[in-house]
Image 1 (cartoon, rainbow, N blue to C red):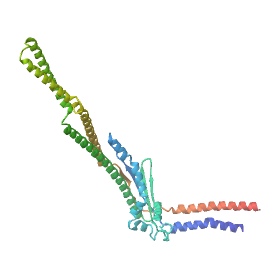
Image 2: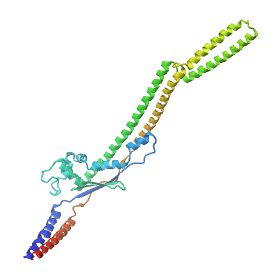
Image 3: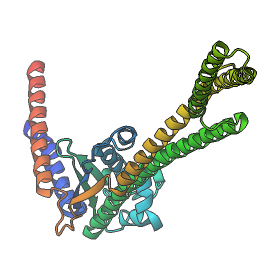
Image 4: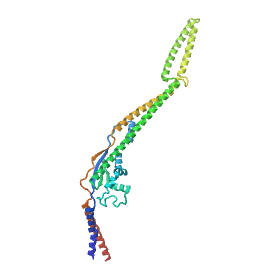
Length: 363
């Protein structure tokens, strides 16, 4: 009786699972073809920039790891599945009748939703990235060698398109921001120039400082004439008090004094004087010069942005093209059968020991 039970236990835990494993791996399990591609997302060294260019560079092009992560995420996204499943090509490839029911997508026809297909897709497409050297390995498992390479090539092209799209967006933002800075600087220059022209037309002056300098030169000449006239008058009054030229000189002196006072009032003598206008004028001149310098800096930054935009900032470099497998790599048939046999023996031995221990306690 004990031998009969031991034989049945051996048959149930070792022989039967091993036979089922032989049947599955030998006749049922479909061959799995694996296509592998390797690529790296590279970013060329950027030239040193200054001023606004550094800010734009740091804001728009930090490093290639961002683009690499985006490309890797996109490969396993729902959008990628929709792209390669146009005309149900992916669905048809993995629902073919030659694929075993254990490997085929929706073999019973009960769960054909897109979400179920996406779960199946993620099991067949793997993306592994090495953080040390940045190399990404893209593997696609299929039950036909050509399907494996075809879907691998399509996904790799999508990764490249994703990186290029990010590049184009970053370059567009870079130039757009620089153009906005130039446009704002141009508006500031035009505004300050208009304010300066309005000030000149309203007050009838071109340059208060230069005009004040000319006025002071004129006043200096008038003062020289006044001093000469007073000296001549003093000499006549001393030498010939009754000379008829004395009243003429007196009138000339009074006229010169009035002119000097009038001209001095134009230079410094209230808000309408040249001195009063000079402060407002200098403020407008300063604002106009600052706007011009800002425009020059913005133009330099725009040129740098265009130079950066002409460079291919980040790109996908293929290290290994999608392979066309000439033989199935999976399933590991002999390994699976031996693993089943080994596990069966382990379970059989453990069960046998437990049964023997129980019998000893009962006896």
